[in-house]
Amino acid sequence: MAEVATDANLQACECGSKCEFCDPENQKEIVDYDGLSENTPTYIRHNFIRKVFTIVLCQILFAFGLVLICYNIKPVKNFFVRYPLFSYSVTLLYVISVVIIGCVPGLTRNPTVSAICILYFTPLVSIMLTGYCCAFSSKEIGIALGISAVLVAGLIAFSFQTKYDFTKWTVLLAFASLQFIMAVGICGLMRIRAKYIAFSALGSVIFSIWIIVDVQMIIGGNHVLQFTVDEYMFASMSLFTDIITVFMDILRLVHF
Image (spheres, helix red, strand yellow):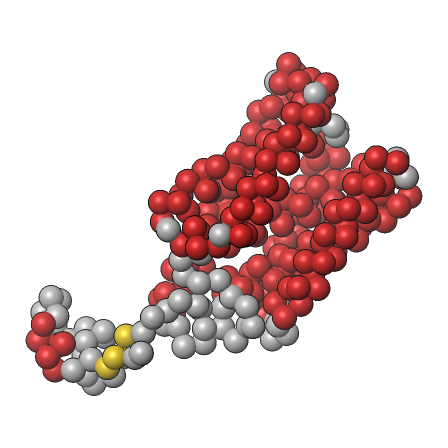
């Protein structure tokens, strides 16, 4: 329920002057800003967006920093190449953790739990990415990284500018993503190269759309689905994971 500031509020204000929150002339409403709707004050929206993108940038720098270090230390690189089961185990642990978080979404709204989750998930994804990159040449990684950087920057810019709401297709994208993961797994086990290439291309498209959805949920506004201001951990992890997935799909295409 909205509460309008009164003269009593103004007198009780600790700022000692007519600030924008207590000045009755401004008639500012104090509301519960759970979501980032069109009525959310600009400063709240911008703080949330700034926090999420700062976290994502730090995650990306950490992930590719780990890749750079491990890739250039021969014993470590050989370990990832010789024991792919280690990377698979980390990936499985990540998937299980995501399912748990998805079943208990309220956990991500606790600041302490959010910080722990970020410190937990980021190394998992980074190790998964490191094990994946160790199977490719440095030239292929560089080309894929350049393409991914341009693509992601364009997708984020498009998400801020477009009036079309992609969040309404979230359920359809979820089913498409599940089918894609299963198809890639089957093709990888059966070593069907042509279909593997096709599914890699399809995966880059699917997760590119996911990036648009994530960004639109982050910026809020009139979109059907949007993150609440307390879900910065879940928002940053979603965007970070989708960016890494797009890079991995593009790297597969560059390799083939």
